[in-house]
Length: 168
Image 1 (cartoon, rainbow, N blue to C red):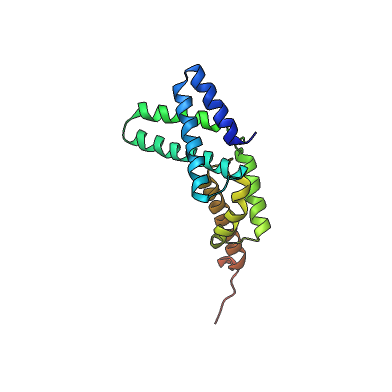
Image 2: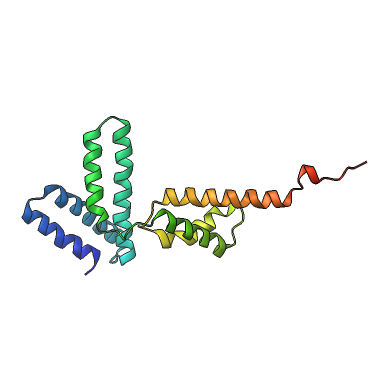
């Protein structure tokens, strides 16, 4: 059963049980998949279906931040409830330790040595973390790791002032 079929079946179940919030959220996700299918002119792959749900969650997270900034806690709470409904359909999120290990593996696999290699590392990581970690958070971790690697390389290359020889 594809994710799209599962969403449709659970939308029907939510309609029968009278759970209007769940019904509406699942309908929005199904409609987003339908619109993408129409735009592409072909059925979505499993990965694309996951991307749609992941994008819906990301949109709602951004809405939560905006509502909280505007002092609309009621709307922020509703968006968080929608996120909880959608997250059931996403793969289990990566822990910080798993994410850090993946970042280190990506840096080694791509041979990245400075912050200029961020794009290459993110290109390697993106398919492995999609739907399982927030892209912005992953990017921050990669940037920090590359900055540390860049500093370490810089420290090794630059002579230490205590060890300089006098020039005359």
